[in-house]
Length: 450
Image (cartoon, rainbow, N blue to C red; front, side, top):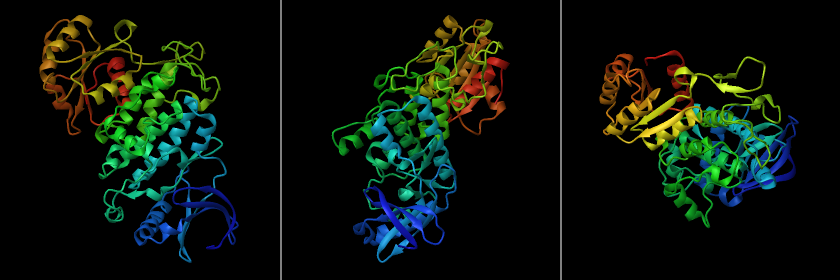
């Protein structure tokens, strides 16, 4: 068929059957997917399939399964792809139920790289799930861009029927459920669901039927990983909460940011076992070489450096300390739920976090606890940043505190930040890693204007 000699069936799904095949001229093995005849007979589906196969063929990335060819022969639609001999992630999860945290982060890092590359080219996968992640040794490949949407193409809208839900139920972003326009943050949501599944052994919203699952994506709070699997860093709860936020604007901006945030809190927590009974073995102040000794499992954040200079394997996070070397105190003033979650992820257990609910509460806590940094919402009626900054600066007890505006507009310049009385600012949306870097600069090397 189309120059390929079919050897054996290697997979079956809702769209058709996948065969192991060899191109008779090139002598190259390929995974040949033949679309189910009832789908192929649909004119709209055939048009969309061929268009999206062409889109997928434009992607070249080490973590994306390469599309070799696609077309129609004797009324049958087919797509020829790179053959990956290993199992898919869903098969691995069926056998092992859940995976160790370092292994999940390594797989997640590769899937995130593939997705961000696709997004950079204007493509959205829309069907990220374990069955579409192929594993060959330690290499992960993202496949099946059959539901890919070209962000720049308006024709894709007319090829999707009104009310049609595109994707797999357990990994669908709320905006997909509602049939709204989507961007790369829908894939961020799906990747968050996949990470949750790999770590806990369960999908985030396990319900009796698909309608109940869709309702949960729209309305239910994501469950806490710490309640599904003991021994994981508690900071991962905030990472998943942000990745699975109902609003795309409050999620991580990229898939890489999601994985970096998960990596930061995991590295900050201490050594973890890669077994299903992973547990904490060291204090939150130290980070040792993982049991596997795998260098890829070492801290990747450049701010995490060897402590003490004695050649030991303990690691500590520089900069996140207060006056006199004591653990820093960070006061959150007027932040919304998303910003608070990002702050918890960025700070993990390195600083003490206190929260204020309004202007009076902010000032009382600032005088009582003398925080090293106050993170204040750039637009908050309950804690107006200019008023908060003026009051802090005029009080002898609090005048040396560092003030950072969170959620400032990207056009906010250094002069505007200084006029408010703040030391730095971070525009929305921001990642925990960006906030961590800002905090380190403030706490480690004095005020830094934006």
